[in-house]
Amino acid sequence: MEDAPGLDAERSNDAVKDPAPPPVAARTPPQAQPPFGILGRHLAAWILGIGRNAWLFPLDVAFRVIGLRYGWLRSLFQAVPASLLAVSGRLRAERAAWHAVHRVPAYRAYLASQGFDPDRLHPAGILQTLPETDKHSYIDPYSLPERCVDGRLHFKGVTIDESSGSTGTPYNWIRGASERRFAHRNIAFFARYGYGEGNLVTLNAFSMGAWATGFNMSLGLNRHGLVKSIGPDIGKILSTLQFLGPRFHYLICGYPPFLKHLLDEGELAGFSWDGYRCSALVGGEGMAEELRDRLLERFELVYSGYGATDLEIGMAAESPVSVAIRRIARARPDVRDALFGEDPRLPMVFQYNPLIHYLETNVLGEVLCTVSRLDLMSPRIRYNVHDAGGLLPFGTVRRALASAGLDIRHLGACPEAMGPRGELLWSEPLPLPFVYVFGRRDATVSVMGANIYPEDLESIIYGDPELAGDLQSFMLMLAQDDAGTPRPGIALELLPGVDLDPARVVHVTSLIREGLRRLNLDYREAYREYPNAMEPVVMPHPLGSGPFAGDVGRIKPRRIAPPA
Image 1 (cartoon, rainbow, N blue to C red):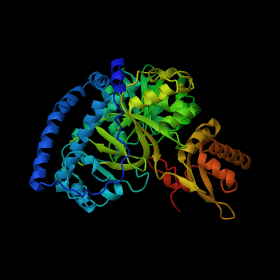
Image 2: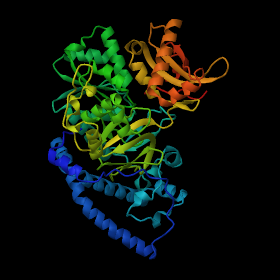
Image 3: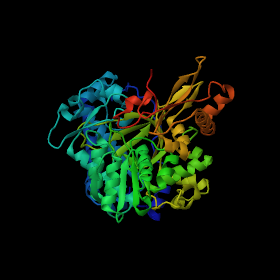
Image 4: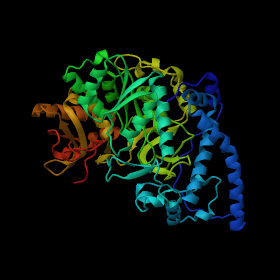
């Protein structure tokens, strides 16, 4: 991410209304049409297009030039009022939507299938009219060429990324050279802000091959120094650290549980972590603050990125201020409720660039994204990956924290924001908007009306160092007792050499039960009414066996067991 805003920039943000768009209800096809017919509509659209392009063209040029240098782009975010960034971002998103309406065959067919006449749409306020898209409604029915601009595949400089398939069948996503370069710049920008301006030695432990994250993270972080693309190989990471020695600042990238295993295996092998300066960049799944605490025992900084292969990687990123906000919200329910509402989960909190990703929320509390650039081979308009969350303008967060007696410019000095080894490296906040994400809306198991989330279990497991040190993974499922009563089931994948005897299973069951009662209001109320039905069923399994047998070779572990 970038550096912090100056005081003038912060005052300019305070003087404007919060620019975040309100939640939007399901769109209905427009009934009333302009009275002057097809010719009049096209003339009006042409005039509006000329005006919008006249406004956006200088911004496009300036953004492309300024984006070439980290310091220039940081200064842009510091100097430009949040309201102007928000308006410009929305205009860019509307232009991208208009472009897709007229140039993408699949999108035109999709609109027609939803009862819209693409030729009767008007460019002004078009995002308020268009329906959502997602994998089921838009990706599955149409071929890859149909979803590309002008219905054509290009070949030079084009790659296809494959999603991990963590929620089902892997999908293929096509990207041109221009959009990949832009994504790499965005990754590099946030990394420079988060980890400092010095050279980094990046050891990329994300899975390589056709998956988007590994390959693109290497290219993006190559802008900040030496990169070795290793993949998730603990032995090679440790041998590389030993080969290069402790004189560099290392950035180790990978999925959060993998980096925890890296620390565990390194300690078992006698690796001297204390002699190395290491930071971590994680992604691909959510991360409990308890897991971050474990990583911060050895890593100087731990930040996560937010994105989706459906859209783009590096859409948003954790920053010093967003991490501090989340850690304070973990300790202070008043801050948590003021910012994120009454959801029992603690969301991940990120900042994003509103000029390139236009985010909004629907009535279900799901985050929608329009990639607002015109360089996408396959545009995504109001695309829904079904992540539950919300948006918060910087000014709104600043005022909410002030009401709680906190100064957003100095959150890093708050005891609640500190790590296990003390105060974390702090940078003055950038006045960029926040997006918070609870996780996938359907990632839950319901028992007696109580929704139980993998995030709950992650907090409990990684909050207990002994249990966390014995596990490779865990999975949430519905279980049945001997009487056929549904109960919350927790499968635990044990590391080699670990065995949970009956007494330890009873202890772990108690640990999980009390943790759920503490963290999850739904569970607490249901347990009060149905204590027998809400008693967890803990099921230990050797590595790679039972429900975990299907996870061999998977890029990301499953946290919800598939239906039987």
